[in-house]
Image 1 (tube, rainbow, N blue to C red):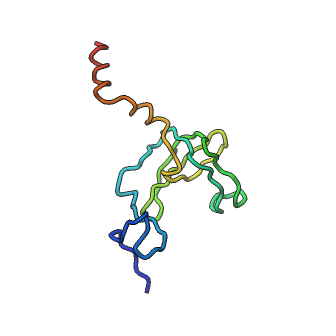
Image 2: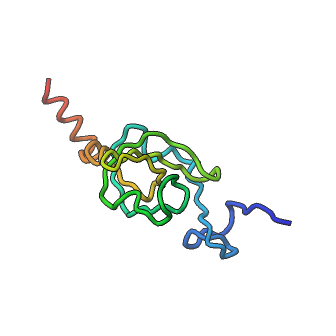
Length: 125
């Protein structure tokens, strides 16, 4: 009889206590890292694992450094967020995990500390 793995298992190196190599973190307990419309960049090459229709297995879908926009957010296995990213240069929409993306919008908005932003507002009056 198969039983589901508890999230209370050992989290050593992101693996279960049983050594099955499964990730333990349940991303959907936290808000998504990206929002629809956000500009992102791929942090690694993504190849077709057989789940992308109309392309050969192993074909490059996204290259490291490609830029696109988050179109939609879904979940996988009630554990992970999957970000549907539209890659305009390639004309494709590919499902991506958060660790495969970096935001190009947040780096601009979070670069200045709050105290500097408040100071700038006062001087603009």
